[in-house]
Image 1: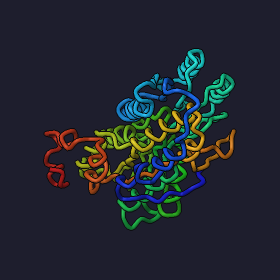
Image 2: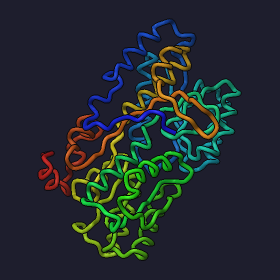
Image 3: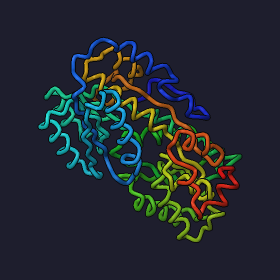
Image 4: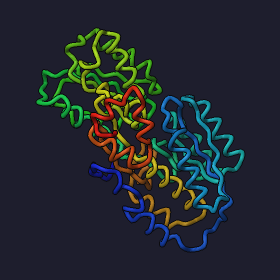
Length: 369
């Protein structure tokens, strides 16, 4: 799926679109008078509520950027499907009926949504796939480099184990089978783990449900033995919380937990990393992705073709379409060592948000206080 490999960097400060020259280039390229006014409406469809990032980060950033780009005349309409394909289909249909100007779509089921993408296209409404690569005639794709996410998770897990060998048994708790990103995360992780460790058990997790992840981990513990698990690949932070519950229920103390990965840099995960319960997460600079999506949406609606092309220079393939214009944003391995340089420096969390009374000592030890 990925055409262009992007190197991991230690700090996200250099990842801003302005720093990459994209904003300046696109603004200059799209300086001609737009074919549409600033009075536009951008539909924003998110897939589920388990992950708090959609309501806390993605949508607020998109909403703010759309307003900024349209002199506060542009509007955004937000819907969350709560993990239901049927609900999301209805939401797309409603936006078609309302003649929304463009849709930013984070699909619940990338394959099942294809007919609705086609229907929107036939109604003259462009669709930009956001975060997950939806099938059907989408106009662009804005996301993170998903294989790189898995590579970062797998590489960091191997480093945490240290001196890995095939004697080391790993449990993989992957994401939802209806989310194409989950397959790319898994593929990336396996590229770092295969041949180096033994994947003793591997599970998919419907709708990224932490309770299902916890049940899967309980099965793995029963089959392998809690003392024989060298590490756990968890595709995201919410599931990592369920995995930790399963290990603790099996009698594993916090100090004896194996290294566990995650993704999304959710606040509870950052705190678990500080306390040592979770080894790492993947920090994905949401401002970069959300702002790029908002810029691409506004440029597309307003007919700023050169600006749109400047923002979507990468290319990806889906099972139904080839050479889809894309913007792939890089990611960072988040550990105890770089919390201040990533989520704090980028304004995602304040020190006060992270270093509550329970985690004060951990924050002092990590140099956050």
